[in-house]
Length: 236
Length: 167
Image 1 (tube, rainbow over the protein chains, first blue to last red):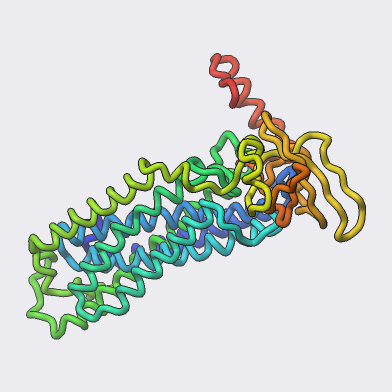
Image 2: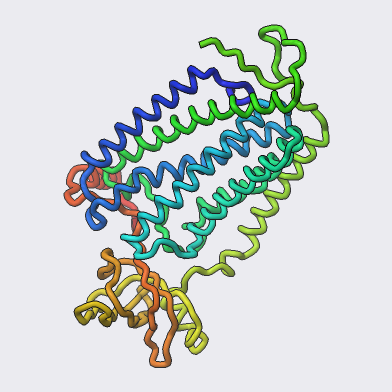
């Protein structure tokens, strides 16, 4: 388990490079190899970025929630650093998700936005993430910041399963989740490439971002204590 | 690259207050989720009514702004040409049918049998006066010529006797 500790930058950069490669391959396949959709034509291709954004936004939020729980339960700045990094990643993806969805909605549904349960709960997810990040930036004491935002993340996480199930629980304008049975084979390839591409890219960036967070926290906590012997446990 | 960055020290104190906060947060989250799912919000939160619901509401639907959702009935689309033109069609859920009157050019995806959500109100004549027309599509994405994959799937399913009804 890497998250209680900081990842080496080499690993993070390797993940970023892998993500870029996968996204290049997925984008090429999605734009030039996959055929047009029967009714939607080229517009459907936005699915290749929209769906990976959705999956990874929810995944990163879930991981952030795990870090928040681990911080409260076990302590350790590693959890807090990754909590912060994953929250930001989830916020970026949620924002992209809403924008991409809007761009897809206009030509197909005929509107940019409507207060459909899926759209509304997704907007709540974005606002919750931004709210927690605002809370973090407003609290100066590292321990209070870590503790309070961890509590906020755990409570806000309730929205994630609601986003997922909203299309099943309620009437909605948004369609239900697709599955390999409802999507033609040539559409699945770019979807998977981009999904793993976004995962690797955001994962790598989050690992790097956690290092930045750890550095800042170290500065806030004041001059370092005498250096620990190599290999010593990093959590007290 | 030599990695000199270490996690800040000292680590946060391992105190029980924080653990209680973890328990509390999980309890609040679980309670919130339980309340939302078991508390009947499914019935109280309605994005649109189906044609049957609108029929059942009777006079209540007249004059109130509501959303009606369903499928465009086969053969029901009548369109007088030109911009700002009249567009008439019926929305059905297989049981009830509600005639809808709209104006203007519908979204490109609009066609028979596709899902629509229309916002507007019922008139006394029993026609839904649509102010906002939205097309909803299913979760199926198909290539125009999609010979191999689905056929193989069907073949496998049928040979194994797994063909699902109503799939």
